[in-house]
Length: 301
Image 1 (cartoon, helix red, strand yellow):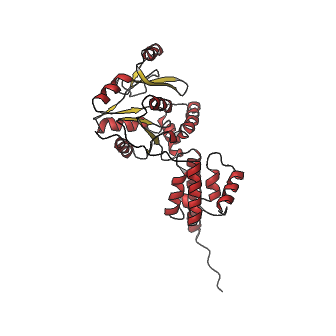
Image 2: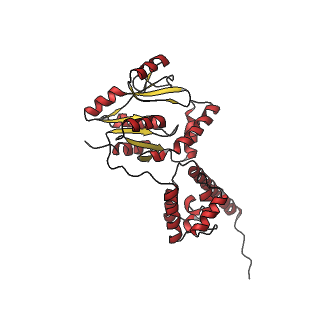
Image 3: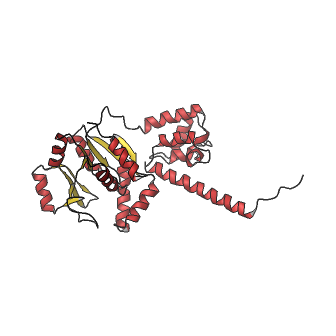
């Protein structure tokens, strides 16, 4: 039998590059699972419909489970044994019964938020640092003038390009203390252990009374306070398209040093873990699309 010719050197190099790219894509997806940027149920469902070479479909079930928060190798092996899934299986190669069993287990361990019965005219937009909350809010301000975008008071200094009364009310600590004493803030919090932020109550109450939709772009602490004060508010959590993209945005912003970026990323992990407290999730992959999706979640008058 004639010996098969070996593939040309250029083919081997291209195959090697593809293999490296595939490993990097799976590693990125595992980071997204670990940081909760993506929900494991979403990844499992993608694996059933995407090409076998896609990051989701080609990921081994062992890699998938150990990428999830608080799942070590021992717990992973017990789960696979209970569900009757071989550790050599890839997500895209699971049988129907295996996929259903894993989906039911994930739904119990990582439940998605229950849909709200109705929508509110008071929208709260929150999410991790550098996810683009301010950019999405700015698009809503420009494209949907019928919506009142609440302007927060803050003790931090303005960043380049920020305008007093448009982006924030910049106040000192004494003025902020007076706002608290006068019960003039709907919510207030210290963010990143440094500066205080708060939402003036009066403009919101007046706009809602006039039948307008109001959008609050605030942090996780503030969103929790608004939910306690106004249970009918609709809470929207803004997600990055990936953890790597979130890191790139924070670095690219160039407004923080290395130590501050590291601290903000630690905070972002905590914030991402709280997304199930929210009513809706919107991925900020494209700013215009994300803004449109947020607006669509408001109650119609």
